[in-house]
Length: 179
Image (cartoon, rainbow, N blue to C red; front, side, top):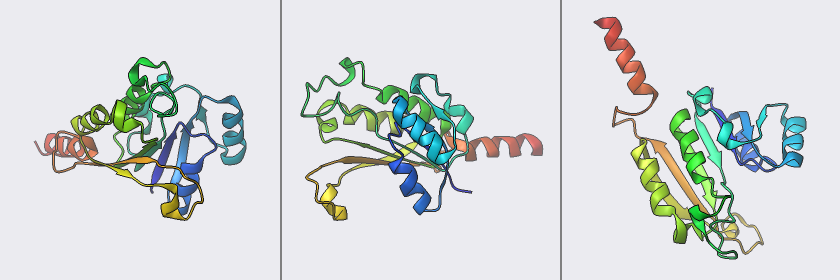
């Protein structure tokens, strides 16, 4: 079964897309109370209110993790304080990624992330075992009339490096049983 965890869920856009692609969303994380109530009413699933309290290990074995960490710290429309801004939650998103170790991950943020943190984010994702690539895909690429640029960060667990992920754990268990 293809399972999905959505961080910084808003009104569940990633969950809608995941459902269309055949994934079952099994949890959300959203701090806005109005959005949480909407998600709970619409999806009937638990909604963690604070990413800092979310234990990603509970979601080990999922296929997909998605999220759009708060954009204000990176937005070119703001002060671009990056990690100096209290709303910078990339560290928490990457912690949950490391704990959950999904097969794939999709993050999005505004283009300002290229100015204030993309290198560190990609490096950390690679360190914890993902092959990653960032893409600049504007809304007009999907026929939206918005003038809205977004940076999409896509990662796939690198199972060729057996230090990471579930396959490594199953190999160790198999060796122990064999040996």
